[in-house]
Image (tube, rainbow over all chains, first blue to last red; front, side):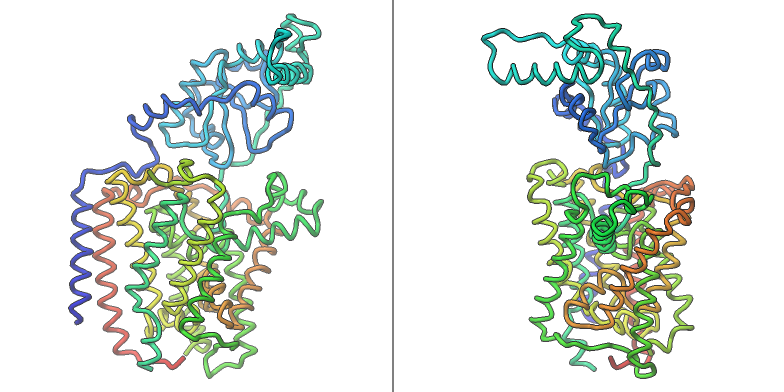
Length: 207
Length: 172
Length: 196
């Protein structure tokens, strides 16, 4: 037998033995606490209410909204096309298929940010990716989209453009600055479309 | 025979190099190599262009029409274009360019071509059902230590061994 | 660190450039190893040429060992690596169909592209066959749908499924591979050479 092969084979076995005795680095999909912590300090997991509104209006298909509030609250008011997965049932296997869709941007929201953040953290710990939180939750949604405040005359053009967008979005969602402040109106055009989306199978092909 | 085989790279060395390419794919793009996915994307693009309404209604192609970007932009398509160029470079270096139909002396060229198309069709169907072919499901799947990779690998090669005797005339 | 693109360390626009470059490497190595010859590939099933087994096994092990060491040195975050989902039934049935395709057609999709590139006409026909196959599958997807999505609960990672640690699994894999290389080299000596 060729000496070259003997040497390379022994080297390979040596590497294998080292790997077998190295302390295990998690290769499972669950992510480590330190990683989670560093992600927590990273603001990119937040999506602004404006962005969410924009997605809904344009019907971006690669985004799904998940309402983590209890079902009663969801039935009273929810964002169009949002799926209701109450926080306490988030870990049920039936729901995981919805969250575990790498190709789809999953945005959690609750009334504030707290429950959505918990949902985000739980899902992230399970190793799911492409997860986001709607910053400020529904409270901010009502504040910014449904009851957008007109900026000062001196405001910059971007601020005014933002306001124009919010005003239009507010009308789209049936609230609106026209009838400023009447939060009951926001409930009017609620679409309780429960989208039972496709099963969560990362599409195969090769790889 | 001997000089013919020395024209090819030492298989172990080739394996290490292929492993490094695979590792690079994981390191840069977070995904393994693949082949059949590129074909699928190409087909999806064709179907969407030729028969858009049909594609929309199809449960298989429908999901492609919903994406904004054309499926042709997919990673694997670029990768396969690279494969084409890489093979051309290698063939040029080794002087292996030759239009020919390779087959066992026991069968005609026609039989070989029919078998090739039949084999290709089976591979096409199988790779969709198995979520990837030898490169995507088996090789990359094994490298990432996924159960799917090992199941695919055993299943592909196991079946091929079982049926090898029946189809021996095609090859030896 | 890695995977660089997934983590936006390298911008997304580089994604396809890198795909192309990696593809070149892939195609080059496949062709150099002789994967552009269907009769060389088929040799693994008749014992006259085990190049497929060698390249395949060595590549998988190199990449695995590389990934694990990269992960150990924190050069790569394995949780961001795409791991093929496991759908046991469709993986087995798909694998059986592909196995048949392999022994009849003599190529797999990657190698057929490679062989087409250097002018093998049978490879081009094989590639055409893949197109037809996928088109057929796409058109009759409703037939396959249930099987395709049928999920048997199995661990996603193979070492979890077998109930051993990751490192132990890799060590066992290496030993199996080395044994396979040795045995096949003996078989190759016994089996008559086939001229191709």
